[in-house]
Length: 493
Image 1: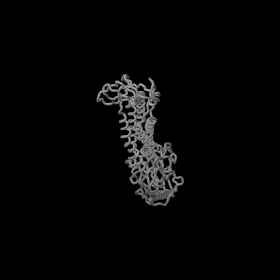
Image 2 (image 1 turned 135 degrees about the horizontal axis):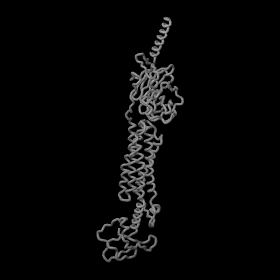
Image 3 (image 1 turned 180 degrees about the vertical axis):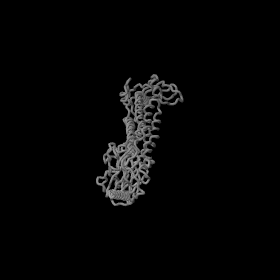
Image 4 (image 1 turned 60 degrees about the horizontal axis):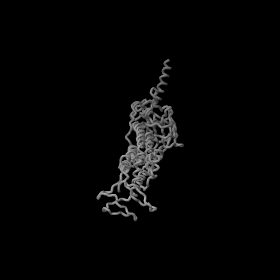
């Protein structure tokens, strides 16, 4: 009996010494950045890397480490858990600060290590194994995102990381009993093993609290671009268009307000917003025109410039076109036809409305797609989408209500054009001595219409012309024959 007890004691002692020896021989290193931690330890001929962050299922996007000193040409291992619990591991490389591309033939093939991969409501841990490359000093880059990739595919588009950095691991470090502590390697309640502790750990619960880092310079540029471009294309330009639609039937000075918003305010705001977008992409070392938002931005800035040139041309070069004689009680289509308006006027209106319509779609892409992809900080604030929806309803309604004034506008323009046409044919009368006769190509007109001496020549207003009595006839010569036709004349110019 005593011999059996002695044998059992010796076996237990040897197992204890073996466990101490195993624990004492753990080799690896660890580090903690501002938002995530990584540890590496030797696992036979493989190295196991575990990444952890205090981000639960609702806030976690993806985590990655890369072997190298910079993003360019770094061999990256990117991992994320999907909604169905499946964990994706994607090995990628990048030529710069661009979207990493899948590496079809990596130098070392990484494999998911699920015993050390899990996710809770407040913590995410992902692990993989990779063959050793005999490096003792391991240079690493790391990054983390808070927006989950759209699919589980290894080649899916990744959202922008919110935090990143680099570090060095000394893989020849050996942890002794005094530095090792029981660290959970699975969800709460699972068995604990011994791993290299993180620098801030005294137990398994001391990971750094996740906090968003300050905005990077390029992110500040993109945010300023979004604010200026949104104000320019969705506030300044639409107000200028509404002035042109509403005010022209009530005042002859409407063009000053239209010009002020479209050019004086629009040019500095819109062009500043566009240049900030270009500067932000250059600062990020990103690609230009590689998605719909960027291409549409180029289209909009070009269309806006064309619209300005059209407006200047229409304002400075007005063709002399007389309206077609109009019948009474014409509808809008007939009024448009008889107005004889130049084609460029219609093109100017079409381009302006197209710019505003495309701008709504452009801002929608910025709120729902570009913000998350460019900053990695999740969706844009919900209030931005609510304001967008409200303005997308209000603006078209106000503009369509303004179209009810179109018949009045066309009638006013037609009357004004007719007045100008009559004024160009009429022969203005000048003061002359009493009883004198005025000769027009051999014809004599007696008793001309008297005009008060010193009275200034003034422009006939369209409404006064319509209401003035047609009680004077003068003679004008036909341009081709020599017959004289009566021309009604309300007041001398």
